Length: 144
Image (cartoon, rainbow, N blue to C red):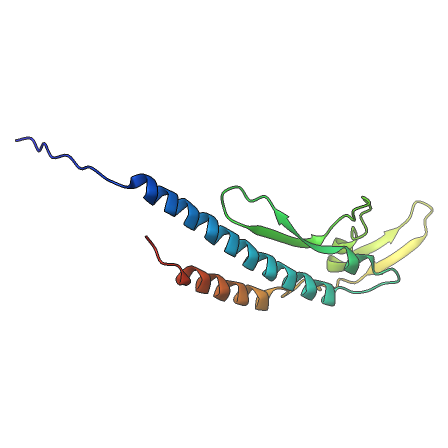
């Protein structure tokens, strides 16, 4: 025996429109929370960075919005190029991990640079705050 029932959904256009607006609104709020968290991490990262004669490493640390296709807002915090195109924080890896004994082409020894892992533990407090804020923002919404 065949079941010949028909289901008609009314107002589907309005429902889809409301869902789209909800997603866009939540995305914008989440982006703002993510930006605030990245700025907090940037400040902590800069405060822990060792300062040499020029301060280039500390000054080059910036938070940047990256294009995260379909996954939501995302920021990275790391040494970056300046607007003039100069890259002053290139030695972050050498500072973080240190170097082995080195010699120059002339034979001059430049010695060992001990590692200083100033990046360790950066962002843990910001991560906890970020998660709490995002959960509160998501719980605030009423689902359709």
